[in-house]
Amino acid sequence: MPSDDLDALGRFEEHLREIAGSTESQPSPPIVFYLKYTKAADAIRMLAELLDGGEAAREGEAGTLVNGAVGSYSAGSYLGSIVTSRQGTITMMAGSITVVADPRLNRLIAQGTASDIEVIEGYLKIVDRDKGLTEVETDGASAVIELLHTQASEVADVLRDAFAGQVVESSQSTKAAGSASESAAAAKAAAAAAAAAKAKAKSDRPGEGGSSRGQDVDNEPKMTIAVHEASNSLIVTGPPQLFARAKRLAEMVDQRGEQTIQILSPSDPLVVESALLRLMGEEPSGSRGASSRGASRPKPSR
Image (cartoon, rainbow, N blue to C red; front, side):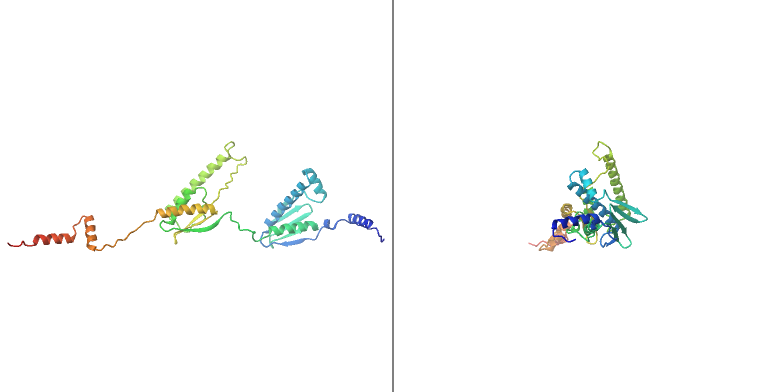
């Protein structure tokens, strides 16, 4: 019936919505999200972590954990996501949300309430991206160190010894090494592996500085060193600060191998020839001729 009381009409609308139920709580039809840059299996795992993190944040805003859990549960939230794999199909269930990964078409099939679909769509915009806003340089970039006076392989060995523990051996080499170098490299790798195993075993022992879980996390920056024999250069990949140190050391070693050759141009070639003959222990031909000529010269008569 029509009424001029706006307050009464407002209360009537609220009661009607409570009886009919909110449209946001109604289940939506299956929604398909096609992924372009992220695999479906990776996206569904990241989506589960993001949903759990968002739920934890809402619980923290509600106050204590107990009050937050009770308040959020009444709003139709979930206690945590469950990811299962059955015959190659990965499924995530979180409260009223169900997401199935389809690796064949690299897509996610989601079903839930309208608000759940909005949350999933917002998270997938973050997950499915081709690149970040900044260039990732945690592993560094490759750069070339040109050498002029020393063999690149010798300088590479010096760098590996100087930065022991910070050089990661590459799986492929730019030059085929001989049997002797291969055996030396194998022995060196075996020694490094034995030292690493010994250090790990020591860290796993209680009371010796090791972690309780037996995990030894190495956070030191790493670099790789490759030798390019054709150009006598080193290709170094690593963080900028580590590359700068390696470059300074390589240049110092290269300068020590510099050889200076000076060419002298004397005015009289005979002088140089006679000096070289004297160094070799021989008598210069000019002096021999002069002495012979002096000996055979007749004395003047009086």
